[in-house]
Length: 373
Image (cartoon, rainbow, N blue to C red):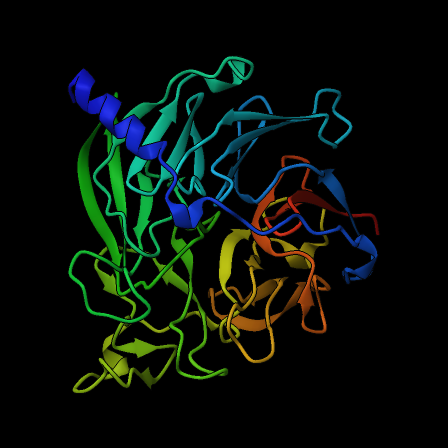
């Protein structure tokens, strides 16, 4: 890419659209309203991370946090090892919906709708962040354009391309791609999964390395259908139904004619309708009780247009030894009080000590959940 092209790409990534210029005011934190299982404790890890979205942990313990409408990327730092942030630094701002962050080999990768940016050797440069390297600027600037990104066990960067609509049939959208990056360039691109309406969270099973992801169901079919989904894509080339089929067996009234849901991959677990599942991780730590090991934790951001709100919680999907879901239940709730929500969980991250971090873009904070028995 030429120097002029790089400058244009950076400028595009740093341009906020009118729609992304404002975000909801920070809500008051009400920890006493949150319900956790017996023996668990929740406290604030960082209390000033406006519009906090997805998280990635650096090699030296820096927590990097993206945002959406705030347009910023944060470095959250625990200087004294007391498991509470001492500083929150803004390492990039004015970005276009920089929700996704990923860390690899000392460098921070950030998604900015059309672009993937890389901030080199970032943990040694938090006070003077470098200009980003533009890895690619070829993604579409469409609805559902904000992206969760993560490096897989194969070393490739996985990037979703959301549907550019509520419901439509558009080629080259509604999928999960993976990028092979060498140096400053993408040298190969592959589509891993198709029929994925809008995933804003995925992870890999700690034992099998299989890709698991959440998917947000379509709107405008009423309050109770379709379900959102937890899916598994152990190999490339699988199709998960969108826009033809939702959940196990709901044919779409606009695009399902002539289709059969049995032709597509069914969810591992149907989640609540319109709960907006975002971040998802397997609990891989040793701090929680044994029954939590390798189970699925999901941040449900919450419904936006349902008659009665739903979601606004962290849930757990329990799996058996065959990887089949046996239960789906709240792990933490209470951010929704009646029809008023004071917080909105976005992402979950297991820390080296086994604690769980949860980001909240409504309250603008990061929580730390521990087990004390």
